[in-house]
Length: 282
Image 1: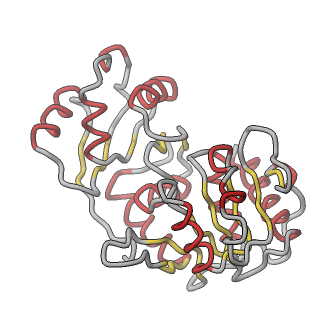
Image 2: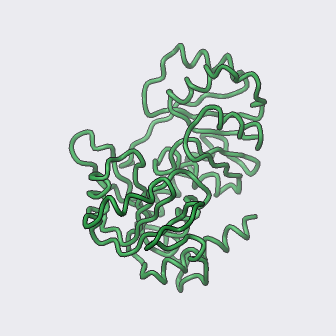
C-alpha cells in the first residue's frame, strides 16, 4: 500500500541520516532494477540529499571517476555489484559507507538495507523546488561523462509533462523494463507515483520475463528502446502470452527501423507506439 511505502521511504531516510548523510550530501546507487531502488530514489531526495544513479554497464574505472567527481558519501549496491567496493579499494573518493540493498546475505563491511529502517530524519520532506535532487551522468560522447544536476522542480515538471503525453492515470500498471539509472525510465518513475499508479519491476530487460510479468500483473505501459521492441515483437512465443492489457509503449534513444515498428504493430495491435526524445541536460 502507499502508506507502507511512505513509511519505508521515510525510515530508509532515517537510516541514511544515522550514517551521516544530510542535506546536500551525495548518495550513489549502482544496482539493477528493484523496488528497493525505487525506495532509494525517494528517500535520498526526500531528506534533502542528492541521488547519483550510476550506469550499470560502466567499467570500474568509470565508476571510480563518477564517485569522486560527484563527491558521493555513500554507495548503494545490490548483489550483482557487491564486489565493486573491493575492486575499487582506495579509489572510491569520499565514500564512507556501502549499503547493500540486495536480497542475498549482507557482505562483510556493508550496511543492510532493511537495517536502515527507523525514524524519519528531522526535516524529511522539506526539500523541493530548486534543491538538487539528483546528479545524472551523460553518455560522455564528447569526452568524459558530465554530471547533470537536476532539481526537484526539474524532475516533477518533466513528470507533469509525461503524464498527459503518455496518458498515465491511477489504473496504470508500469513495468520498469529499461534501466532505472536512466532518465528515460526515471521520467515514468515519478510520473506513475504522481498518479498513484502501480510499479512492476524486473531486474534487467529480458523479453520472456517482461512478457510473463505483463500477463501476470496486467501491465498497461512500458518504455523501451528499439532493440527491446525488436526482441519483443520477434519473440518466438509472444502468442503464448496474454498482453492485451498493454496500452502504450513509448520508445526512443536510437532510430527505429520501419520494419521493426511494422512488426511490432502486427504482433501488438492494441498498443499505441509513441516516439519520444530527451536529453539528460533537459
